[in-house]
Image (cartoon, rainbow, N blue to C red; front, side):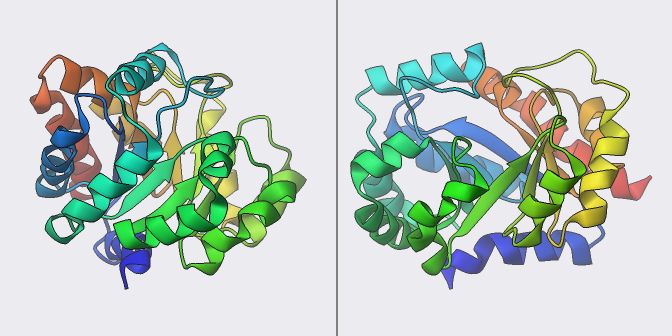
Length: 261
């Protein structure tokens, strides 16, 4: 069943003693016609899954690099409908699990029922909707009812009680945000990040993946000492834009080498 692809991939990482690596790209950045090629590249390089951004004019969590990618995608005429149609077209050729990351307005404007129907056709395994708190998830229950994981975020400012509430019925993985701010590469992380990731791991029934700011192989190796994997966005987008695929390969390999040392 396609909606189990993410759970299966994460379980495979755990069983093999590996760390997960999930790259983020913006759908339609570089034209939707290049999406299949991008996804197959990640698949061939050993990424665990791909987080696929839905371009939106008013993002609240995205930094400058992802904002610019979203604008490029919108200028290319990318819409949620076109993304889903393209994914359905290439579904048989791409086996890596796909996770949507988008804001609630895009989904509500599309229509939650039609969104779920089309996500199932396209083989979407998970959704991240960062502006929807746990208390409002009921509106998006059809996503979960269709077997698509609704992935939750915790942050450095979440209390221990709030983390436990978020983790209690978490699906797929918990997205542990490692900075207090928007996405984008960072030189270094706060000294509290290691303990924070360990705290989330302690209470989570599902894998914990760190994201926001991770941009170097050393960042990957450092973060995965404390959690089950990483998500990398801005650095991936920049590397594609500058045709520096080797940088992406080195990031993915850092997650693999972690367990070989």
